[in-house]
Image (cartoon, rainbow, N blue to C red; front, side):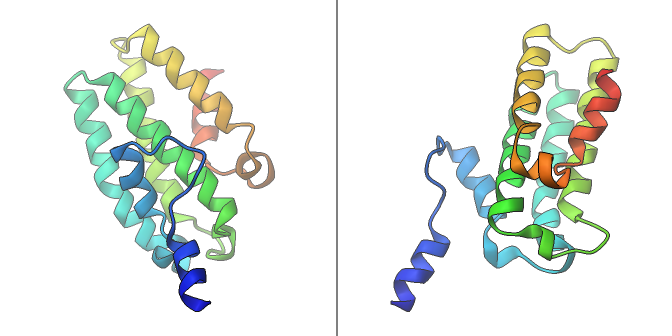
Length: 152
């Protein structure tokens, strides 16, 4: 019975398209990575922050938007599902990394080179996240607040 429970805990999410990117990001949010302030998860998200910045600097806006939305969607899901809110008092480290990702995207938009199609995809993806339990109940991801300040 213990083996079955462990397999259930380690199994990946259902109901989502498991692209190779999504599988990779979901692994970051494995329950085994939960610790104080979720610092391990934050450190595992660092390469995605770097990838987003590199994608933007190379003009790969679609990749940057995809990475940001996939990370935020997983963070939003796992924050509630895995009860990340029990792992920190003042600081939820993964969201600080995501805020930096969001700021990089916003800076690229401000530079005026961001394609309209990708901007629309970004807005639609972020709008969906605003209607999640994590955001409505806990204000997570905080990066959405950064977006809302920019977009108004």
